[in-house]
Length: 203
Image (cartoon, rainbow, N blue to C red; front, side):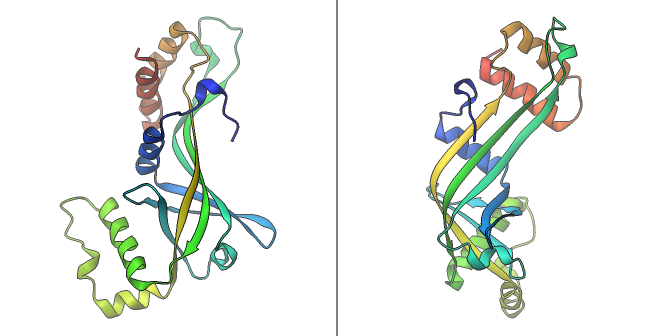
């Protein structure tokens, strides 16, 4: 990923936080000599060494993915930035966004216990704390049948790149103008980008 120095996320902890908060990822690998992508949730393990996930068995991506170096893209908030918000008309449109790229090697999960543990962790992550649903309460025979339809895997994390394009290449005055405009837009991404610009520049 092309990352100008002023957009680079240097703190690995910040990159891991982005992964956790935006865990519905795009997983890209080579399949039959062509790029192949699947959109799916990926769960970071406790020591931040692996990403866990699974795909439907009819999805051909898993059949030749083992031992490949793959790319998982985690998309944070993003939004359009209009030059009409600036103090000058000598400007062009741009896009602000946050993203993290993870590179790693894939191992297929053959151990049923490891697969079940990864599925349980994923359900715990997304279910509300007071939810009545617990994967451990599901009928074992039914669950075993469902599990035959998926292929679990884990990605050994080898490299992480993070990019936060938050108008750092503009003046403080212009950043404040951008924040003011974004705060007037009710969409979540615009609101989040405004907060991130403030936090990044301590405005």
